[in-house]
Structures are given as structure tokens and as C-alpha cells.
Image 1 (cartoon, rainbow, N blue to C red):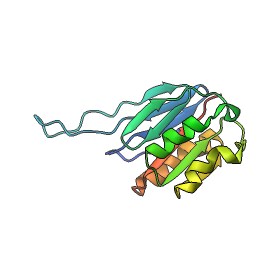
Image 2 (image 1 turned 60 degrees about the vertical axis):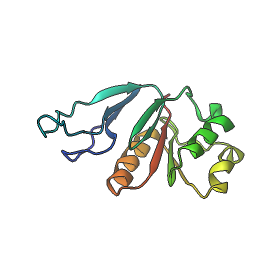
Image 3 (image 1 turned 180 degrees about the horizontal axis):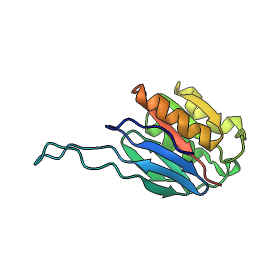
Amino acid sequence: MQFSLEKEVEFYAIHSWTEGGAWLTAPLKTTAESGSLPPMEPFLQEGSFLLMSDSLHDWDCRAVEQIRLDDVKTWVSLRPEIVILGTGNKHVWPEMDILGPLYTQGIGVEIMRSDAACRTYNLLMSDRRRVLAAILVD
């Protein structure tokens, strides 16, 4: 499924979702020499990942049941306003005690299938929200 994008992207955006990963576009940077933007080429991010406006990290997790407290503590350290948890091809709720550190810090959490999480991430990023997408690829 392909999503629409603005031509000038100042943050990591999700171009499309596919089995096995997501096609992403990196933030565009104006080149000092020409003052122009390089072409925006989507790249395939295979496997689960963590995505914020300015950072992309591989995530060694394949299922909601594998999410550990250390994962969530890493999310808290990134200081998002909201975490969008994409649970793969099915909507699955994690153990609520795992999410405790997010709630304690006042960080919002939304849980949905990964394809919906990708769309939601783009929407919130276009509103300049500080969003962390934790996307499981199963």
C-alpha cells in the first residue's frame, strides 16, 4: 500500500508498507554547494524498526510478546510525546505492565496494526509532533 507524501520532507517518512518491511524516505537536506535538494529515493527497511523524525534504528523484536521492559525504557529515553506501536499484521495488545514507564512519564501510547501505525506516524509527523513509531514486522 503506497501513501501520499509532500515533495519536501524534513523528517523520515514512510512511503509504503509491504510484507517484510516498509519503504522509507530519509529527511531531505539542502546541499550547501547548490542550495538544492537531492532526489528523494525510498529505501526498504526490512524487519522491525524504531522511527522518529530524525532517527531510524533496527529493532530486534518480531512479536508483541517479545517486547521487553528494556525496549520500553529505550523508547522513554528518546523523549517522544507519543509512541505508535505497530503490532504486525494483527492487532495485539502487549502486557500493560510493560508499558508502565511510558504512562509514568506522561507519554501517550497508541496500539494498532503496523500498516495503520505507518499511516498514523506520517499524519502526526506532518503536524510536527514528536512521535516514535515502534513497528513490528512479522
